[in-house]
Length: 396
Image 1 (cartoon, rainbow, N blue to C red):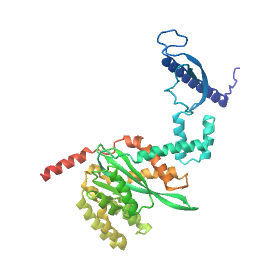
Image 2: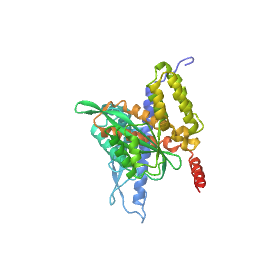
Image 3: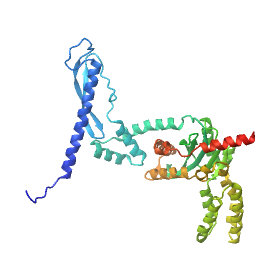
Image 4: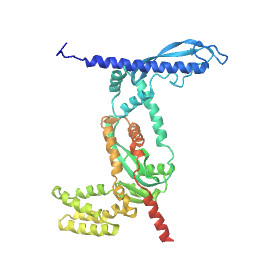
């Protein structure tokens, strides 16, 4: 009527659209199954031909869960041949993307009960804890295979770090460390090289971690970038004696700040950053000497002593092309990954054991490695090649 207001029931529209989508998916899948049956019979329905090898024997219904909802498939039956469909695996009840979503929810820290509620809301059926457990076991096998894969090619730069998570142990909550290595390959792309559980970030844990890396094929490393973790530097000298170690400049700043009054942190921070803004290593050393003297004038003797004894460990990146300095002087590339891991594991709280914590971290890192993070070139390695060529000519 003129001037009238037409009201639209959004819930009814949405319900209708959902039914249309489900119906379309159902019709498409059944049409594909019929076409596949005709291909196996080598003849169409009711077609008389000498090439026919078998005939249809009706069908049976089976339910199949897709992202659009639950559909009813009319599975063809053949008289002389088993109907093995390439479209849908035999006895498979869910679309693979649905199973991947279930595992992803669990790995993201969603509880089993919550996953059941979500699946019922999205797909109209609840997934039992046993099904979810079975899916996670399959994923764990895949992740273990991924973690143990051979390391191929050259990796000149390798970032090392560890993350602390909580685990329940004998009624108590204790810490468990997960050690991670990320490398930059000869083409300049980043790769997650290793994810291992360590009892703690001590020398024994780092020794086992580096031993595994070497056994899997990590070689030609020229620079390791990490914080000065307990026992790490000594372990690097044992397994990779020809590689240099770059102490993360940001972690070093934090160590100095811990010895400085809060009111002077900003001033001291500017002084420290000026050291790493120098044009070469010798200039940086001279600047560090000036900063140390300035700190002593400010009555900050402990901070001055730390700069004198530890600053040189943060200057090893100067031995590499200047185009790479920004990415080499800190462990920030790996720190950003660790922040993502902490965000994902925060919902879990305490893990039942160290292995489950390691599986969750590895699953997330594997996902990140397959995303744009691992597909985007991180460094232009031609600068390193040119520098090596120049050094070879000078040596000759």
